[in-house]
Amino acid sequence: MKQSVLLACLALGGATAQAVTLDDEGRFQFTGFFQLTGGKVLSGEAQGQKSWSYQNFNCPCTIQNWEYVGVYEKGRGLQLDKESLVGGQLNAKLTNSVSATAQVVARPHNNHSADYMPTLDWAYVSWKPAEDFTLQLGRKRIPLYYYSDYLYIGYAYPWVRPAPDVYGWPIFSYDGVTGLYTHALGNSDWTLNASVWRGRSQDNNSAYWNNVYYGTKVSTKWDNITGTWASLSNGIVEGRVMFMNHQETTVQLPGTASATVLSDHQSTRIRGVSFNVDYQNYILRSELNQFKQRPGSASKFIYNYFLVGAGYKFGQFTPMFTTSRYMTKPNDISAREGRFTRSASVRWDFAKNLALKLQYDDSKDKSQYDYPFFGDSKLLSVSLQGVF
Amino acid sequence: MNNRIFSVVAVGLTCVMTSALAEPVVVVGASSPATAVSAEQVAALYTMRLKSLPGGGSVQLVVVEATKPQLYGFLGKSEDQIKAIWARHLFSGSATPPLEVATPADARKAMGNPNAIAVIDSAAVDASMKVVGKL
Image (cartoon, rainbow over all chains, first blue to last red; front, top):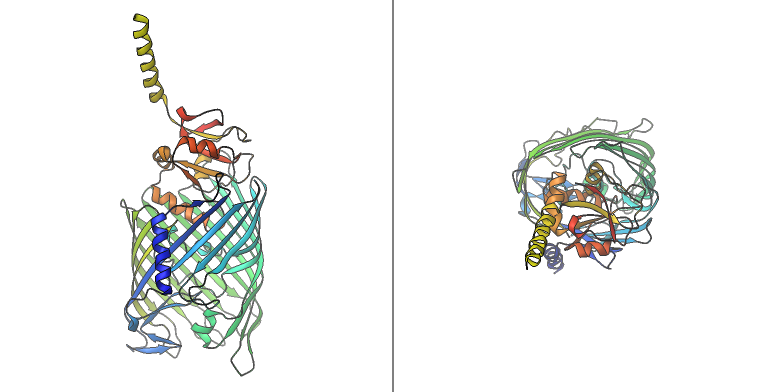
Protein backbone atom coordinates (compact mmCIF):
# COMPACT_ATOMS: atom_id res chain seq x y z
CA MET A 1 0.00 0.00 0.00
CA LYS A 2 2.70 2.43 1.06
CA GLN A 3 4.73 1.52 -1.98
CA SER A 4 1.76 2.33 -4.19
CA VAL A 5 1.42 5.73 -2.45
CA LEU A 6 5.06 6.45 -3.19
CA LEU A 7 4.64 5.39 -6.79
CA ALA A 8 1.54 7.57 -7.09
CA CYS A 9 3.55 10.53 -5.79
CA LEU A 10 6.26 9.80 -8.33
CA ALA A 11 3.74 9.57 -11.15
CA LEU A 12 2.09 12.79 -10.04
CA GLY A 13 5.46 14.50 -9.84
CA GLY A 14 6.38 13.32 -13.30
CA ALA A 15 3.04 14.37 -14.72
CA THR A 16 3.01 17.88 -13.27
CA ALA A 17 6.78 18.39 -13.68
CA GLN A 18 6.61 22.05 -12.85
CA ALA A 19 7.49 24.16 -9.85
CA VAL A 20 4.32 25.24 -8.09
CA THR A 21 4.24 28.95 -7.40
CA LEU A 22 1.96 29.53 -4.48
CA ASP A 23 1.41 33.26 -4.96
CA ASP A 24 1.52 35.76 -7.86
CA GLU A 25 4.91 37.22 -7.05
CA GLY A 26 6.61 33.87 -6.64
CA ARG A 27 7.39 34.44 -2.97
CA PHE A 28 6.31 30.92 -2.04
CA GLN A 29 7.42 28.13 -4.31
CA PHE A 30 7.07 24.38 -3.96
CA THR A 31 9.45 22.17 -5.90
CA GLY A 32 10.40 18.54 -5.67
CA PHE A 33 12.43 15.65 -6.97
CA PHE A 34 12.23 11.89 -7.12
CA GLN A 35 14.00 8.79 -8.23
CA LEU A 36 12.48 5.39 -8.78
CA THR A 37 15.50 3.10 -8.86
CA GLY A 38 15.60 -0.62 -9.41
CA GLY A 39 18.72 -2.73 -8.96
CA LYS A 40 19.49 -6.36 -9.69
CA VAL A 41 22.69 -8.15 -8.70
CA LEU A 42 23.64 -10.30 -11.68
CA SER A 43 26.48 -12.20 -10.03
CA GLY A 44 29.14 -12.01 -7.36
CA GLU A 45 31.68 -13.86 -5.26
CA ALA A 46 33.94 -13.41 -2.25
CA GLN A 47 37.05 -15.41 -1.31
CA GLY A 48 36.05 -18.10 -3.80
CA GLN A 49 32.52 -18.44 -2.40
CA LYS A 50 29.48 -18.04 -4.62
CA SER A 51 27.11 -17.69 -1.68
CA TRP A 52 27.81 -16.21 1.76
CA SER A 53 26.38 -14.03 4.50
CA TYR A 54 27.74 -10.74 5.75
CA GLN A 55 25.95 -9.15 8.73
CA ASN A 56 22.25 -9.50 7.83
CA PHE A 57 22.87 -9.59 4.10
CA ASN A 58 22.62 -12.67 1.94
CA CYS A 59 25.29 -12.32 -0.70
CA PRO A 60 26.21 -12.00 -3.55
CA CYS A 61 25.24 -8.41 -2.75
CA THR A 62 26.37 -4.85 -3.22
CA ILE A 63 26.11 -1.69 -1.16
CA GLN A 64 25.05 1.29 -3.28
CA ASN A 65 24.12 3.72 -0.51
CA TRP A 66 26.10 3.97 2.73
CA GLU A 67 24.10 6.71 4.48
CA TYR A 68 20.87 4.72 4.65
CA VAL A 69 22.51 1.38 3.83
CA GLY A 70 20.99 0.46 0.50
CA VAL A 71 22.19 -3.09 -0.19
CA TYR A 72 21.03 -5.13 -3.18
CA GLU A 73 21.01 -8.92 -2.73
CA LYS A 74 21.15 -11.35 -5.66
CA GLY A 75 18.61 -13.68 -4.05
CA ARG A 76 15.96 -10.95 -4.04
CA GLY A 77 15.96 -10.29 -7.79
CA LEU A 78 14.99 -6.80 -8.92
CA GLN A 79 14.67 -4.54 -5.87
CA LEU A 80 12.93 -1.16 -6.04
CA ASP A 81 13.09 -0.17 -2.37
CA LYS A 82 16.81 0.44 -1.81
CA GLU A 83 17.37 3.85 -3.39
CA SER A 84 13.94 5.12 -4.51
CA LEU A 85 12.87 8.35 -2.89
CA VAL A 86 10.67 11.39 -3.28
CA GLY A 87 11.44 14.83 -1.89
CA GLY A 88 9.66 18.16 -1.62
CA GLN A 89 11.07 21.60 -0.98
CA LEU A 90 9.34 24.79 0.08
CA ASN A 91 11.06 28.14 -0.52
CA ALA A 92 9.62 31.23 1.12
CA LYS A 93 11.02 34.67 0.33
CA LEU A 94 10.23 36.54 3.52
CA THR A 95 11.82 39.83 2.42
CA ASN A 96 14.16 40.82 -0.41
CA SER A 97 17.12 39.62 1.66
CA VAL A 98 15.64 36.88 3.87
CA SER A 99 14.29 33.51 2.78
CA ALA A 100 13.48 30.18 4.41
CA THR A 101 13.85 26.72 2.91
CA ALA A 102 12.70 23.31 4.11
CA GLN A 103 13.17 19.99 2.35
CA VAL A 104 11.63 16.66 3.30
CA VAL A 105 12.52 13.30 1.79
CA ALA A 106 10.62 10.01 2.02
CA ARG A 107 12.38 6.71 1.52
CA PRO A 108 11.17 3.11 1.70
CA HIS A 109 13.66 2.38 4.53
CA ASN A 110 14.96 4.84 7.07
CA ASN A 111 16.60 4.21 10.44
CA HIS A 112 15.32 7.51 11.76
CA SER A 113 11.60 7.16 11.17
CA ALA A 114 9.00 4.64 10.10
CA ASP A 115 9.39 3.39 6.55
CA TYR A 116 8.14 5.90 3.96
CA MET A 117 7.75 8.61 6.62
CA PRO A 118 9.31 11.85 5.36
CA THR A 119 12.31 13.19 7.27
CA LEU A 120 13.34 16.83 7.47
CA ASP A 121 16.64 16.71 5.58
CA TRP A 122 17.13 20.46 5.14
CA ALA A 123 15.75 23.41 7.11
CA TYR A 124 17.46 26.78 7.11
CA VAL A 125 16.99 30.51 6.96
CA SER A 126 19.07 32.55 4.50
CA TRP A 127 20.00 36.18 4.94
CA LYS A 128 21.74 38.11 2.20
CA PRO A 129 23.33 41.20 3.77
CA ALA A 130 25.42 42.02 0.69
CA GLU A 131 25.41 41.35 -3.05
CA ASP A 132 28.08 38.63 -2.86
CA PHE A 133 27.43 37.12 0.53
CA THR A 134 24.74 34.90 2.07
CA LEU A 135 24.51 33.71 5.65
CA GLN A 136 22.47 30.60 6.46
CA LEU A 137 21.38 29.19 9.79
CA GLY A 138 19.95 25.71 10.21
CA ARG A 139 20.29 22.18 8.85
CA LYS A 140 22.06 21.48 5.58
CA ARG A 141 23.84 18.55 3.98
CA ILE A 142 27.62 18.67 4.42
CA PRO A 143 29.07 19.88 1.08
CA LEU A 144 32.11 17.62 1.28
CA TYR A 145 32.50 16.50 -2.31
CA TYR A 146 31.17 17.71 -5.61
CA TYR A 147 27.85 15.82 -5.36
CA SER A 148 27.46 15.60 -1.56
CA ASP A 149 24.85 18.31 -1.16
CA TYR A 150 22.74 17.06 -4.05
CA LEU A 151 23.44 13.36 -3.75
CA TYR A 152 19.75 12.50 -4.03
CA ILE A 153 18.90 14.87 -6.90
CA GLY A 154 19.49 12.28 -9.59
CA TYR A 155 18.20 14.55 -12.34
CA ALA A 156 21.22 16.82 -11.75
CA TYR A 157 23.96 14.31 -12.64
CA PRO A 158 24.64 11.76 -15.38
CA TRP A 159 24.68 8.46 -13.40
CA VAL A 160 22.05 6.46 -11.51
CA ARG A 161 24.04 7.54 -8.42
CA PRO A 162 27.46 9.10 -7.81
CA ALA A 163 30.01 6.34 -7.13
CA PRO A 164 29.40 4.84 -3.67
CA ASP A 165 33.16 4.20 -3.49
CA VAL A 166 33.45 7.96 -2.92
CA TYR A 167 30.12 8.90 -1.34
CA GLY A 168 29.66 7.12 1.95
CA TRP A 169 29.87 8.43 5.49
CA PRO A 170 27.58 7.87 8.49
CA ILE A 171 27.15 11.61 9.07
CA PHE A 172 25.94 13.62 6.08
CA SER A 173 24.28 16.74 7.46
CA TYR A 174 24.99 19.37 10.09
CA ASP A 175 23.10 21.85 12.20
CA GLY A 176 24.94 25.12 12.26
CA VAL A 177 25.89 28.22 10.37
CA THR A 178 26.98 28.56 6.74
CA GLY A 179 28.48 31.43 4.77
CA LEU A 180 28.27 31.50 0.97
CA TYR A 181 30.26 33.82 -1.27
CA THR A 182 29.92 34.37 -5.01
CA HIS A 183 31.91 36.79 -7.10
CA ALA A 184 32.38 37.50 -10.79
CA LEU A 185 36.06 37.97 -11.67
CA GLY A 186 36.28 41.22 -13.62
CA ASN A 187 34.58 41.18 -16.99
CA SER A 188 35.59 37.59 -17.63
CA ASP A 189 33.46 34.45 -17.76
CA TRP A 190 35.01 33.27 -14.49
CA THR A 191 33.18 33.18 -11.21
CA LEU A 192 34.43 32.33 -7.75
CA ASN A 193 32.09 30.52 -5.36
CA ALA A 194 33.10 29.67 -1.82
CA SER A 195 31.60 28.57 1.46
CA VAL A 196 32.52 28.16 5.11
CA TRP A 197 30.47 26.22 7.61
CA ARG A 198 30.49 25.28 11.25
CA GLY A 199 28.18 22.93 13.10
CA ARG A 200 27.60 19.50 14.54
CA SER A 201 25.57 16.38 13.93
CA GLN A 202 24.55 13.36 15.97
CA ASP A 203 22.90 10.10 15.01
CA ASN A 204 21.87 7.87 17.92
CA ASN A 205 20.95 5.00 15.63
CA SER A 206 23.48 4.98 12.82
CA ALA A 207 22.41 2.80 9.90
CA TYR A 208 25.99 2.81 8.60
CA TRP A 209 27.61 1.56 11.80
CA ASN A 210 24.72 -0.70 12.87
CA ASN A 211 24.03 -2.50 9.65
CA VAL A 212 27.37 -2.49 7.87
CA TYR A 213 29.93 -2.94 10.63
CA TYR A 214 28.79 -3.78 14.17
CA GLY A 215 25.41 -5.48 13.94
CA THR A 216 24.27 -3.71 17.13
CA LYS A 217 23.02 -0.23 17.88
CA VAL A 218 25.73 2.40 17.48
CA SER A 219 25.60 6.10 18.25
CA THR A 220 27.87 8.46 16.36
CA LYS A 221 28.43 12.19 16.38
CA TRP A 222 30.64 14.69 14.61
CA ASP A 223 31.43 17.70 16.80
CA ASN A 224 33.14 20.95 15.90
CA ILE A 225 32.60 20.47 12.18
CA THR A 226 34.51 23.30 10.49
CA GLY A 227 34.83 23.30 6.73
CA THR A 228 35.41 25.35 3.65
CA TRP A 229 35.27 24.89 -0.10
CA ALA A 230 36.04 27.15 -3.02
CA SER A 231 35.39 26.68 -6.72
CA LEU A 232 36.37 28.52 -9.87
CA SER A 233 34.28 28.09 -12.99
CA ASN A 234 33.79 29.66 -16.39
CA GLY A 235 30.77 27.56 -17.29
CA ILE A 236 32.96 25.06 -19.15
CA VAL A 237 35.58 23.98 -16.62
CA GLU A 238 35.21 23.94 -12.87
CA GLY A 239 37.82 23.26 -10.21
CA ARG A 240 36.89 22.82 -6.56
CA VAL A 241 38.87 22.29 -3.36
CA MET A 242 37.49 21.41 0.09
CA PHE A 243 38.88 21.02 3.62
CA MET A 244 36.95 20.01 6.71
CA ASN A 245 37.87 19.11 10.28
CA HIS A 246 35.66 17.52 12.90
CA GLN A 247 35.83 15.35 16.01
CA GLU A 248 34.22 11.94 15.79
CA THR A 249 32.75 10.09 18.76
CA THR A 250 31.28 6.67 18.09
CA VAL A 251 29.84 4.43 20.82
CA GLN A 252 28.55 0.88 20.44
CA LEU A 253 25.39 0.33 22.51
CA PRO A 254 24.69 -3.43 22.62
CA GLY A 255 21.39 -4.35 24.27
CA THR A 256 22.43 -5.54 27.72
CA ALA A 257 26.20 -5.21 27.73
CA SER A 258 27.94 -1.99 28.67
CA ALA A 259 28.66 0.56 25.98
CA THR A 260 31.97 0.37 24.11
CA VAL A 261 33.60 3.63 23.11
CA LEU A 262 34.95 3.11 19.60
CA SER A 263 36.28 6.64 19.21
CA ASP A 264 36.20 9.63 21.52
CA HIS A 265 36.50 13.08 19.96
CA GLN A 266 38.83 11.61 17.36
CA SER A 267 40.28 14.47 15.31
CA THR A 268 39.45 13.91 11.67
CA ARG A 269 40.36 15.79 8.53
CA ILE A 270 38.59 15.33 5.20
CA ARG A 271 39.88 17.03 2.07
CA GLY A 272 39.08 16.81 -1.60
CA VAL A 273 39.64 18.24 -5.04
CA SER A 274 37.46 17.93 -8.09
CA PHE A 275 37.84 18.98 -11.70
CA ASN A 276 34.97 18.87 -14.18
CA VAL A 277 34.54 19.85 -17.80
CA ASP A 278 31.37 20.45 -19.81
CA TYR A 279 32.67 21.44 -23.24
CA GLN A 280 30.04 21.32 -25.97
CA ASN A 281 28.90 17.68 -25.79
CA TYR A 282 31.94 16.38 -23.89
CA ILE A 283 31.71 15.63 -20.17
CA LEU A 284 34.57 14.93 -17.75
CA ARG A 285 34.06 14.27 -14.03
CA SER A 286 36.88 13.70 -11.55
CA GLU A 287 37.35 13.75 -7.80
CA LEU A 288 40.16 12.83 -5.44
CA ASN A 289 39.50 12.78 -1.71
CA GLN A 290 40.98 11.71 1.59
CA PHE A 291 39.58 11.01 5.07
CA LYS A 292 42.29 10.98 7.73
CA GLN A 293 42.10 10.59 11.48
CA ARG A 294 45.08 11.94 13.37
CA PRO A 295 47.11 9.62 15.58
CA GLY A 296 45.84 9.46 19.14
CA SER A 297 43.82 6.29 19.38
CA ALA A 298 43.79 2.80 17.94
CA SER A 299 40.72 3.68 15.90
CA LYS A 300 42.45 6.07 13.55
CA PHE A 301 41.43 5.46 9.96
CA ILE A 302 42.78 6.74 6.67
CA TYR A 303 40.73 6.39 3.48
CA ASN A 304 41.80 7.47 0.00
CA TYR A 305 39.23 7.49 -2.80
CA PHE A 306 38.58 8.88 -6.24
CA LEU A 307 36.31 8.75 -9.24
CA VAL A 308 36.95 9.67 -12.86
CA GLY A 309 34.40 9.51 -15.64
CA ALA A 310 33.99 10.68 -19.22
CA GLY A 311 30.96 10.95 -21.43
CA TYR A 312 29.48 12.48 -24.55
CA LYS A 313 25.99 13.80 -25.13
CA PHE A 314 24.39 12.44 -28.32
CA GLY A 315 21.12 14.36 -28.51
CA GLN A 316 18.91 12.96 -25.75
CA PHE A 317 21.44 10.27 -24.78
CA THR A 318 24.46 10.73 -22.54
CA PRO A 319 26.63 7.63 -22.13
CA MET A 320 29.42 7.71 -19.51
CA PHE A 321 32.29 5.44 -18.53
CA THR A 322 33.42 5.84 -14.96
CA THR A 323 35.91 4.21 -12.63
CA SER A 324 36.04 4.68 -8.88
CA ARG A 325 38.07 3.29 -6.03
CA TYR A 326 38.47 3.49 -2.28
CA MET A 327 41.15 2.00 -0.06
CA THR A 328 41.86 2.21 3.66
CA LYS A 329 45.21 1.88 5.36
CA PRO A 330 45.29 -1.10 7.73
CA ASN A 331 45.51 -0.11 11.41
CA ASP A 332 45.57 -1.68 14.89
CA ILE A 333 41.94 -2.78 14.78
CA SER A 334 41.18 -3.35 11.14
CA ALA A 335 42.68 -4.91 8.04
CA ARG A 336 42.63 -3.08 4.72
CA GLU A 337 39.22 -2.38 3.18
CA GLY A 338 38.86 -1.33 -0.41
CA ARG A 339 36.97 -1.54 -3.66
CA PHE A 340 37.50 -0.82 -7.34
CA THR A 341 34.51 -0.27 -9.62
CA ARG A 342 34.04 0.25 -13.35
CA SER A 343 30.70 1.56 -14.56
CA ALA A 344 28.98 2.09 -17.88
CA SER A 345 25.88 4.27 -17.78
CA VAL A 346 23.51 6.04 -20.12
CA ARG A 347 21.13 8.88 -19.37
CA TRP A 348 18.15 9.40 -21.68
CA ASP A 349 16.44 12.80 -21.43
CA PHE A 350 13.23 11.52 -22.97
CA ALA A 351 10.81 14.12 -21.61
CA LYS A 352 10.77 17.51 -19.94
CA ASN A 353 12.18 17.30 -16.40
CA LEU A 354 12.50 13.51 -16.67
CA ALA A 355 15.48 11.26 -17.29
CA LEU A 356 15.70 7.49 -17.58
CA LYS A 357 19.06 5.96 -16.70
CA LEU A 358 20.58 2.54 -17.14
CA GLN A 359 23.84 1.59 -15.44
CA TYR A 360 26.08 -1.48 -15.21
CA ASP A 361 28.63 -1.67 -12.38
CA ASP A 362 31.43 -4.24 -12.22
CA SER A 363 32.94 -3.97 -8.75
CA LYS A 364 35.91 -5.80 -7.20
CA ASP A 365 36.32 -6.10 -3.45
CA LYS A 366 39.95 -5.36 -2.53
CA SER A 367 39.43 -5.80 1.21
CA GLN A 368 41.79 -8.06 3.17
CA TYR A 369 39.43 -9.09 5.97
CA ASP A 370 39.69 -12.71 7.10
CA TYR A 371 35.98 -13.14 6.36
CA PRO A 372 34.01 -12.43 3.18
CA PHE A 373 32.83 -8.79 3.08
CA PHE A 374 30.46 -7.47 0.38
CA GLY A 375 32.61 -9.21 -2.23
CA ASP A 376 32.80 -8.75 -5.98
CA SER A 377 29.56 -7.94 -7.76
CA LYS A 378 28.00 -7.13 -11.08
CA LEU A 379 24.97 -4.87 -10.74
CA LEU A 380 22.41 -3.67 -13.27
CA SER A 381 20.41 -0.57 -12.28
CA VAL A 382 17.62 1.36 -13.92
CA SER A 383 16.26 4.63 -12.61
CA LEU A 384 13.56 7.12 -13.53
CA GLN A 385 14.59 10.48 -12.12
CA GLY A 386 12.95 13.84 -12.30
CA VAL A 387 12.23 17.23 -10.80
CA PHE A 388 9.00 19.15 -10.49
CA MET B 1 -6.24 58.04 -51.81
CA ASN B 2 -2.53 58.14 -52.37
CA ASN B 3 -2.13 59.16 -48.77
CA ARG B 4 -4.21 56.19 -47.65
CA ILE B 5 -2.10 53.79 -49.73
CA PHE B 6 0.99 55.43 -48.36
CA SER B 7 -0.32 54.98 -44.82
CA VAL B 8 -1.09 51.30 -45.37
CA VAL B 9 2.33 50.71 -46.89
CA ALA B 10 3.99 52.68 -44.09
CA VAL B 11 2.19 50.72 -41.39
CA GLY B 12 3.02 47.48 -43.17
CA LEU B 13 6.66 48.44 -43.46
CA THR B 14 6.75 49.46 -39.82
CA CYS B 15 5.38 46.07 -38.84
CA VAL B 16 7.94 44.27 -40.99
CA MET B 17 10.76 46.43 -39.65
CA THR B 18 9.61 46.01 -36.05
CA SER B 19 9.54 42.26 -36.33
CA ALA B 20 12.85 42.26 -38.16
CA LEU B 21 14.40 44.50 -35.51
CA ALA B 22 12.83 42.62 -32.60
CA GLU B 23 15.55 40.83 -30.69
CA PRO B 24 15.92 39.23 -27.31
CA VAL B 25 16.97 41.77 -24.70
CA VAL B 26 17.80 41.47 -21.03
CA VAL B 27 15.40 43.38 -18.81
CA VAL B 28 15.00 44.10 -15.11
CA GLY B 29 12.20 45.84 -13.27
CA ALA B 30 11.98 49.62 -13.54
CA SER B 31 12.75 49.83 -9.81
CA SER B 32 15.83 47.58 -9.99
CA PRO B 33 19.17 49.08 -8.91
CA ALA B 34 20.86 47.32 -11.85
CA THR B 35 21.68 49.58 -14.80
CA ALA B 36 23.77 47.25 -16.97
CA VAL B 37 24.21 43.49 -17.00
CA SER B 38 26.98 42.12 -19.22
CA ALA B 39 26.56 39.02 -21.38
CA GLU B 40 29.02 37.22 -19.07
CA GLN B 41 26.90 38.12 -16.06
CA VAL B 42 23.70 36.96 -17.78
CA ALA B 43 25.36 33.60 -18.53
CA ALA B 44 26.60 33.27 -14.93
CA LEU B 45 23.20 34.24 -13.49
CA TYR B 46 21.23 31.78 -15.65
CA THR B 47 23.67 28.97 -14.82
CA MET B 48 23.42 29.96 -11.13
CA ARG B 49 27.14 30.67 -10.75
CA LEU B 50 26.15 34.20 -9.71
CA LYS B 51 23.19 34.71 -7.40
CA SER B 52 22.65 38.49 -7.44
CA LEU B 53 22.01 41.29 -9.89
CA PRO B 54 24.71 43.98 -9.83
CA GLY B 55 23.90 46.04 -6.72
CA GLY B 56 20.90 43.87 -5.83
CA GLY B 57 19.66 41.07 -3.61
CA SER B 58 19.00 37.40 -4.45
CA VAL B 59 18.14 37.30 -8.12
CA GLN B 60 14.76 36.06 -9.33
CA LEU B 61 15.38 34.46 -12.72
CA VAL B 62 12.41 34.72 -15.07
CA VAL B 63 12.21 32.51 -18.15
CA VAL B 64 9.71 33.40 -20.87
CA GLU B 65 8.52 30.55 -23.07
CA ALA B 66 8.90 32.48 -26.36
CA THR B 67 12.55 33.44 -25.79
CA LYS B 68 13.71 30.12 -24.32
CA PRO B 69 15.43 29.01 -27.55
CA GLN B 70 17.48 32.23 -27.72
CA LEU B 71 18.34 32.07 -24.02
CA TYR B 72 19.40 28.42 -24.05
CA GLY B 73 21.24 28.93 -27.33
CA PHE B 74 23.12 31.85 -25.80
CA LEU B 75 24.04 29.68 -22.81
CA GLY B 76 25.26 26.97 -25.19
CA LYS B 77 23.19 24.29 -23.45
CA SER B 78 20.15 22.19 -24.20
CA GLU B 79 17.07 22.61 -22.03
CA ASP B 80 17.74 19.37 -20.14
CA GLN B 81 21.33 20.46 -19.42
CA ILE B 82 20.08 23.77 -18.04
CA LYS B 83 17.40 22.05 -15.97
CA ALA B 84 20.03 19.69 -14.53
CA ILE B 85 22.21 22.65 -13.53
CA TRP B 86 19.24 24.40 -11.92
CA ALA B 87 18.19 21.23 -10.06
CA ARG B 88 21.66 21.00 -8.54
CA HIS B 89 21.50 24.53 -7.13
CA LEU B 90 17.82 24.59 -6.16
CA PHE B 91 17.97 21.50 -4.01
CA SER B 92 21.37 22.15 -2.46
CA GLY B 93 20.53 25.49 -0.92
CA SER B 94 22.40 27.89 -3.17
CA ALA B 95 19.63 29.30 -5.35
CA THR B 96 15.88 29.76 -5.55
CA PRO B 97 13.67 28.40 -8.35
CA PRO B 98 13.44 30.34 -11.63
CA LEU B 99 9.98 31.58 -12.50
CA GLU B 100 8.91 30.04 -15.81
CA VAL B 101 6.18 32.10 -17.48
CA ALA B 102 4.22 31.71 -20.69
CA THR B 103 4.13 35.25 -22.07
CA PRO B 104 5.93 38.62 -21.82
CA ALA B 105 2.79 39.90 -20.05
CA ASP B 106 3.45 37.41 -17.26
CA ALA B 107 7.07 38.57 -17.16
CA ARG B 108 5.85 42.15 -16.66
CA LYS B 109 4.04 41.06 -13.48
CA ALA B 110 7.24 39.53 -12.16
CA MET B 111 9.12 42.79 -12.81
CA GLY B 112 7.49 44.24 -9.69
CA ASN B 113 10.30 42.39 -7.90
CA PRO B 114 13.40 44.63 -8.06
CA ASN B 115 15.62 41.54 -8.18
CA ALA B 116 13.89 39.96 -11.19
CA ILE B 117 15.65 39.54 -14.53
CA ALA B 118 14.20 38.25 -17.78
CA VAL B 119 15.08 37.81 -21.42
CA ILE B 120 12.21 39.04 -23.58
CA ASP B 121 11.59 40.18 -27.10
CA SER B 122 12.50 43.86 -27.45
CA ALA B 123 9.04 44.52 -28.91
CA ALA B 124 7.49 43.53 -25.56
CA VAL B 125 9.47 46.02 -23.45
CA ASP B 126 7.25 48.53 -21.66
CA ALA B 127 7.52 51.12 -18.88
CA SER B 128 7.49 48.46 -16.11
CA MET B 129 10.96 47.35 -17.11
CA LYS B 130 14.28 48.64 -18.34
CA VAL B 131 16.67 47.12 -20.83
CA VAL B 132 20.05 46.40 -19.22
CA GLY B 133 21.75 44.25 -21.83
CA LYS B 134 21.66 42.00 -24.84
CA LEU B 135 22.47 38.37 -25.36
